[in-house]
Length: 339
Ligand code: FES
Image: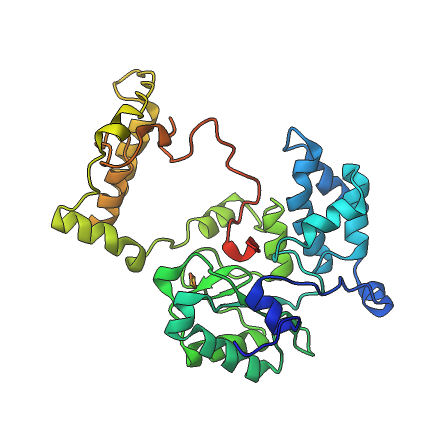
């Protein structure tokens, strides 16, 4: 990390970005306008929440889906519709790195240079790609095809080093594969991500993050959502633990005393709870022993692992207690985290 504090490179290293929002007349004049249709979509987003201001994050993604960044017009659009000040909107938009301050290229290429990826070659990948593209952090190629950025941990350390394009994963990259990836993107190709949904583009994924489908019909949407997800690096820990009969250490007496009894779920006709039935189906549908072991571990009838508090498990079999609000950002990548 040779960059000086205050430079674009330095902002990536420190997580602090003090660069201004691009409001130059040439940029603003070239932007597609936010339309009445967009305003209708914004009101659709607002209707999803009990409080209108809770809609701000997806509305900012909606602005980016049209204009490629949170423009001055987009800030005013959100402020007017939500009854906020521009300063309030700007405070949110400049806090999260997923909201851009300059027009983004057709694709956003994020190279993880956080610790694990960096030591496994992430920094070398970033340096090589930056050299090929002739741009640095948060800069866009002259042809507008790609914006490059350093990224903090992309929550895929088991596949390090990781590159994402428009937040889709390209796992276990090396310098050559990453160079080929960006060259293909510049030729207008869309190489298939390693897992997850097919690649779209920055405006397309921004529209998805605003909660709107990009797919022609329900079948196409389901096919995209049902793309490959967990792979061997993710499941290997579960498999090894199952093979070795390993489990977490038992709770001590103080932990057990502090653990409230879980509320039993209502039984349904045919025996079992809805969550237990869903768990049965997931285990039955698992395609291999590792997936079966993973599904069995989260089954509601599974013995509670020692060291874990049963109250952490919600009545739907997830780990989110019913009283806890899961949050609104949706994507949940640590790209959004800033110090
Ligand atoms: S350090 Fe790169 S994905 Fe976690």
